[in-house]
Length: 292
Image (cartoon, rainbow, N blue to C red; front, side, top):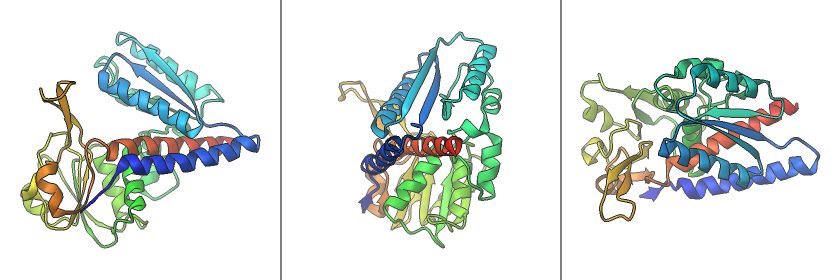
């Protein structure tokens, strides 16, 4: 069993990005600039955004963080998005989700200029991805594909099951894994809350990508011997033995499943760091486009 170490892989990729940015800077080119909008005081969102700012520093990018209270109006958020759309120095930006309930996340997604949509959520970029055109791929699926590539995980002709059909992870993963690329060329099945015989379908998977948001739901009864497991989930579970009072758990019961696998991602330290790498790679791509 090989652990797909996202932390180690992300550090290698960030080093490569930093070298490329250093060359751009030495040649007098534009330094990539990533901006982020953070609304409210959600702890997990603040942690994610801070990690993205640190990654920008590591890669030699410029970063800007705009913080707003949770009572900001939808119109004001849309106004801030328009400012970033029009700022020639900003190559790409993200609006950290989730947003307060009074703000329509779809309106926010549609307001972002597709050419600066480094989260890869705008329908124009989703459409381009679905037919294999060059575009910004959603950061988590992009990071997963990079992780599979770093470990040269065999995917061609493999039976891949994606658990979950979200627009952010499940649906784009199913598209990417089926495309004529490396990694890719898998035969893909998607299972979700209305699927019957889920365990039976999962037990046939050579590659099982789990993005359900249900802590430790997938145990060894879902997994065949030698499968590749990619665990996208992350949940805080109460744990009084920890100083923080909680532990982080994935959607997969790692202790029960790991020994059956050929490859498996840990939680934390698997998909999470690679999501940030996907965002960095998209930002560098956006900067190159704007400089061309």
